[in-house]
Image (cartoon, rainbow, N blue to C red):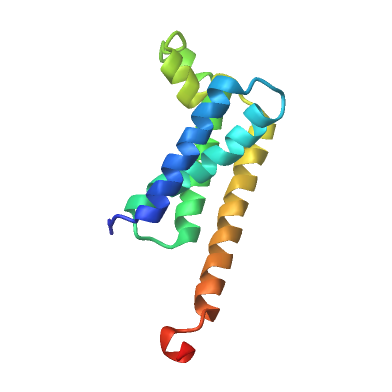
Length: 134
């Protein structure tokens, strides 16, 4: 079922801006490769969650599988096989080399999503209703 969830879309836009900033201005060995991949999973989750009304766990799992598939495409050099290795946008979006640490970063991103969503649900379940505050 599709809907529009403004808060997730705003989170997506903020994360997208952060990812662009990292890509353009951060050239280190920790933030760009690891935090970027960690945040990429969360970014995709927020994008999908902006438009799809489904349980958080299902969307998080689907995004994680998608991230793994992108990394697997790097492992088999899919861009080269498709003749797209010269296209900068393709290299940026799909990446160009496989790393196990990327898989770990994606997994940690999905675990962060799951944890945040669980905390959000718990907090909303324990929040007092307006009628009890009178």
